[in-house]
Image (cartoon, rainbow, N blue to C red; front, side, top):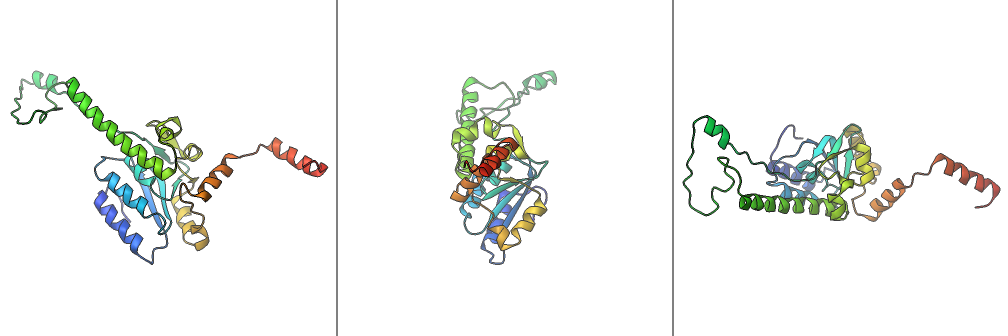
Length: 242
């Protein structure tokens, strides 16, 4: 079990051990993270996704699974969100700080000596050129495409839906809303999830996103008859009209 920040390499190594260990019947990924940098995330996401089918893998958004953390959580068979938890922040951003004004006020004038046409592109000692901005935006778009494609495949959703309002468009979604939208599968606590997966019967309740059982469960969850409809059905049954 890991507490606090960790590297993707360290997590990946421990995850691989759990997958290979015959004494581990199921894997629970306890997530409470605002995300982080992209480096290493696609590789770890692929590792988690590739382990599907070996044993139940459940990610619990135990507070927050945002950005890169959701990228990884989405690769599990199932995503559980705690009642007060939230998931999302699907997007990529990069910040550039133009410090030239502050340096001028401080009486500092840097000189960059470089080789390579774009070596110092995006440096903080001046504003971004249009060409530099376009280059950085292109890289952000590429990473966003990678992020949303991985989530779409793992959650069995169209990429347009992952990029759209249903998945927050970069915002966070609460527990119930995330389940209704397809970002997560159920609301529950970490202890409830561990308890459920501690028995063979409980482990059978895990439905891999995209599977036939998963699609059937989502359809059933969407059909929530009103009390009035239930009364009408009961009355019709009594009258023998259905």
